[in-house]
Amino acid sequence: MFNKKNNLAVLILAAGKGTRMKSRVTKVLHELRGAPLLSYPIGLAVSLGAKEIIVVAGKNKKAIINFVSSRYEQKNIKVIEQRKLLGTADAVSSSMVRLGRGISDLLVLYGDQPLLSLKTALSLLAAHYRNRSVCTLLTAKIEDAAGYGRIIRNPEGNIIKICEDADLSFQDAGINEVNAGSCIFKKDELAKALKLIRPDNKKKEYYLTEAIGLLAEAGKNISSVYPKEQYEVLGINSRYDLMNLENILNKEAIKRLLDKGVTILSPETTFIDYNVKIGRDTLIKPFVYIGGNVSIGKNCVVGPFCHIRGGSKINDNSVVGSFAEVNRSFIGKNCRIKHFSYLGDARLGRDVNIGAGTVTANFDGKNKNITKIGDKAFIGSDSILIAPVKVGKSSVTGAGSVITKGKDIPDKAIALGVPAKIYAK
Ligand code: UD1
Ligand code: CA
Image (tube, rainbow, N blue to C red; front, side):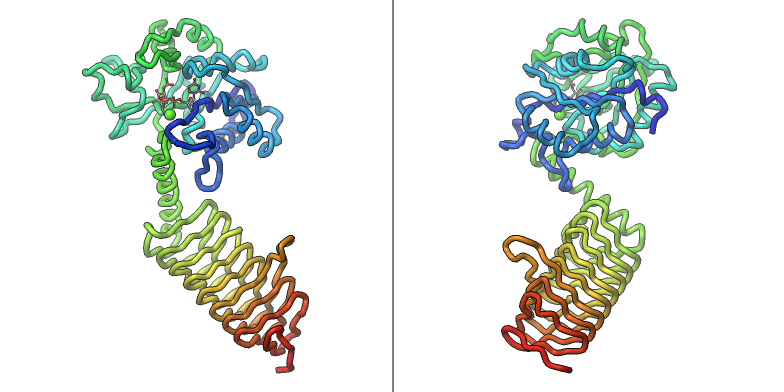
């Protein structure tokens, strides 16, 4: 992806305890939109084509190794342990010794900042190489800068140092340009600066951000870029932050769909997960949850109060109404699933009517099985279809029938009763 990639290593700092999450799960394995926080910077590093990717873990090493080895096949992702959490500079030095030969630049990412986009990361790298900088920082001007390191510039506008929040002087406290936490360094220059860092600060930590002041003092070239979107710099320290980011991403997903011609009545009560596709003139009513990879066609009506998930596909002109759940299912065009029902592992043709209270019993205690329902079938209210089973085209099931496992209903037939008997139509 990036032409200097062969010299680039990405370091992801993730050793922190995440005490404020108040959880038995280490912070970077908490999920945002169904994916662990750590998968965001790792995914970014992979997309950048980094030669080496190192995740710095602490006491959470085991959990992180499990996650990385179960999720990624790339051989160039290593997890190393920072034995004592002495600060971000220490995290970087403990891992630099593990870098292979031929690495010239080091991009440092924080494991608790999942929203950094590929676009922004590429612009950070591009500025770094273009300006031949020793260090290029991502900075942002934000309203509430509390908690962040502040960027201190000289009157000419050049960065001279970063001051951490706890160490701010009264006069610098008003600065609202912050260190967004992602920065790229020339490896050898950084190694020299790291040796000079001392924990002379309120937290008694070895701050990576100290390196910036040291490099500036030595007259090195430091540049900075802004992110494409302000929210990219937001980090997660608490459950509140997690909720906040979940909300931001949900709103972004909704905005993208509105721009494509979808009507969404209540953004506050609509949750739309990643990679959801919805066609023009589809109406999403309030209190709807649409899970990852679901696709919904044009002119559909969804909700209120419904749950679509498991990568289900719903075709044009169909209705999924109140208290309906559709899971891992395919729904053809012009189907009606209007009132409380569960369709799991179902394959519906077109013009199918699903009566209120219908359930596809897809799980037999061991396996998930498929229910097939042909074009123009009419499933009566309160039918139970025990999968695997098939309902033929234009067939009807009577209200309250139980269609037992394997008892396929041919085309144009009627099934009635418990267990259902089949009659000609
Ligand atoms: C850090 C930056 C601050 C920046 C902010 C952006 C430093 C000193 N400060 O502050 O300038 O504005 O991020 O969000 O870098 N970690 C380790 N080992 C350690 C300490 C931390 O791996 O010994 C990891 C943490 O798990 C975390 C990341 O480094 O993922 C950042 O550490 P954290 O303590 O959250 O730094 P902040 O105080 O947020
Ligand atoms: Ca942080």
